[in-house]
Length: 397
Ligand SMILES: *Cc1c(COP(=O)(O)O)cnc(C)c1O
Image 1: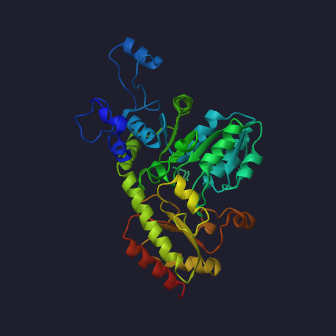
Image 2 (image 1 turned 60 degrees about the vertical axis):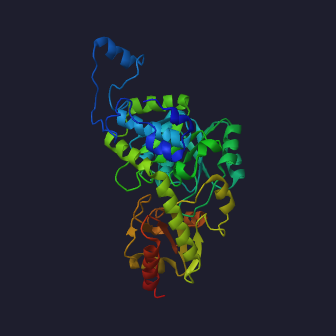
């Protein structure tokens, strides 16, 4: 089918129409190619496909038509040349690092990244003689000072979890490029529906598709998006090392992308309303949500994001026991550290996601004992407020 519409298509159209398997126009919903390998018409054709002379699939660790749909669609939404899907978000980060780094290289990474990302740099890449310096996301001078002659990669996650701090992608990219390093942005919290880091100067976008790209908490997956040249190297790594995405998961993610923009806007609207409501509550000391005018990064967030996302955190007075009473008092929200789901989730970062940090590290990261994180889902806003009232009541308020 000719695709004249593609060159002018908007985000929502691309999210629904881009990437469909050529020749599958009979099925209105794209099929799942549940096959490990592909067959050929002749020895000549097999040889040409394996050598890369002829385009085509050979084995699903290398590529699969259902996975290709997701890759083409996400690349279009991020405004990137090409995407490579992986088995999880962590597999995407590992793949990126082992593609662009070698022994002796150095990485600069924002401090408040996902916990396993810190673990990957500190415990795994360190064994390969790849070192990392962690810096404060918002302090450009720290990024500048941390860079060395062997720095090959800058890595950041914005907005940060759980304080919703925002890094200036354009400026961090300038610092990275001035020392010849690449900038990779973990775009899990915003997704391309709200923020497109490549347009702001980043070289690679990384995703845990497990979160908002699925959106309903069903399957694990990850992705990298960047130039054709970089993704060729990334694909070569996935091909020989095997962190490939399963076709079933890719099908889920392609379906997820179809409703991504609607969902992200709805998550953002509900989070904004809940943040504004919590900010007025007498038991709340502070609300961290970059959609609030009171948030120190509000104006920067408003320039590089089209909305502020679904994750907020707030602090109650009275330390851990009061925060735990609130969390034990809610009935609707799910008590889990996961996020990016239609179901609202709640957690106590100081004793879960950030539980392994020392007291000093927690203080430095702003993770107080009274801090509660809510990843706002898509239930009715009034029900979420009522659930918070149950939490406050359990605190004796
Ligand atoms: C969950 C998450 C990851 C890791 O993704 P997995 O799919 O769980 O491997 C990385 N970054 C962020 C911001 C995440 O929330």
